[in-house]
Structure formats: structure tokens, C-alpha cells
Image (cartoon, rainbow, N blue to C red; front, top):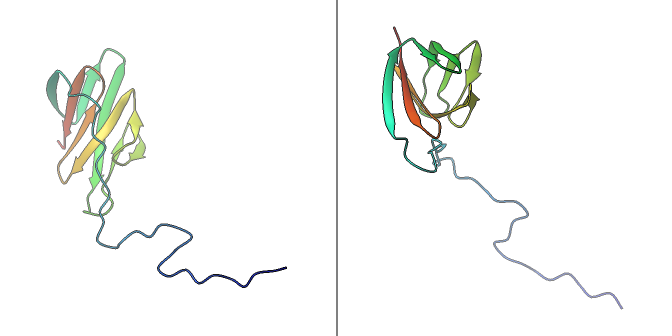
Length: 103
């Protein structure tokens, strides 16, 4: 015997995202022990981080670091991009926070 379908109200097969929701910035799991700020290029023991440009919008901020387009949550040279602002980018790893500013 086949039963008739059951009406389910307010159900959806997939979650909906409101247009008001904004992307979250990637936050480190623990605070970095120190913050260092560099104008344009940070020379680090494991390599360098060179901020070549920023395209800022509230909805989709991106930056060009070491020739790669990155967004919050991206990884570059062992660092996680935490936040992109109109004139600076914050990155972090387990030991420190790096702030790259535009020249």
C-alpha cells in the first residue's frame, strides 16, 4: 500500500542565506603573541610577504599578496589572512600577527 505524501510547511531541502549576512573574517584560534607592521613588504625568516594591492568592498575584500589574489581565510607563506581593510591586510600564524600596509 502506498501512502499519500505528507504536507510539510516551512521546510527546505537546503539552508538559505539571507542577503543581509556578511562574510566573516577568519579569526585565529588563539591570539598571536606579537604584532609587527610593515609598509608593503615583510621580509620573514621563511620568505617574504609583499602586498601589491587591495580591492576593497564590504562584501568581498581581496588583496594581491606575492602575486596571488587572497581573501579572508586564505593562506600565504604559512600565514592566514585575517582581515582586509581599505589600506591594510592583517595576517597571523601561531606566533605573531603581521600587518601589511600599502606603501
